[in-house]
Image 1 (tube, rainbow, N blue to C red):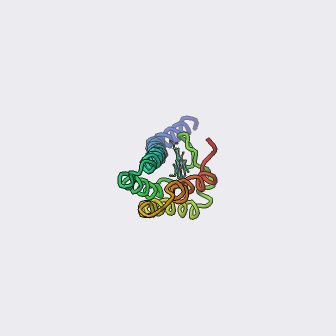
Image 2 (cartoon, rainbow, N blue to C red):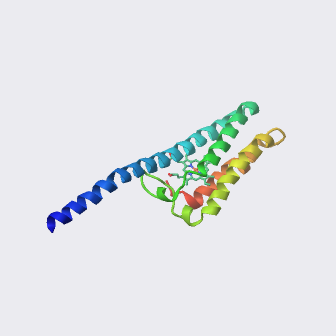
Image 3 (spheres, helix red, strand yellow):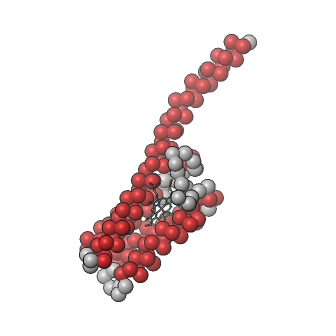
Length: 148
Ligand code: HEC
């Protein structure tokens, strides 16, 4: 009987392990992938601020499009199985308020495209960046990202 139990246990283990390591791999890829996209957005947001300060509007516009595209991709980077691990700073409140979280992400994406248009005519470039870029970062981080 003991041998039988051991056999069953080994059988279950051997059938689960390959799958769980595969699942881990993809969770790792997703979490690391979203962190990389947020980091890229941050780098580009800082570049945008520098470019606009020296009046280089046309050079800033492709970076705004890039950030917008990343936010759109990020909508798919928070599946249920990526709530923890790999140093994620994502809070569980994301999955309790998924519609609100997605709406903020979509707004952040849309606002970057609005920003690319608005800089042509805006008088105060600092204020318009705050309104259409930085405020969206903090609005989401305040509710959905762990203090860091
Ligand atoms: C709709 C929500 C949302 C918006 C909008 C948002 N973020 Fe985040 N951000 C997050 C979440 C959630 C994390 C944590 C991701 C993780 O650790 O898995 C994060 C993480 C980050 C990180 C850390 C990445 C890392 O390597 O761990 C940076 C940097 C960052 N965001 C910058 C920004 C900037 C800059 C903006 C605005 C231009 C922005 N974010 C807009 C939700 C958002």
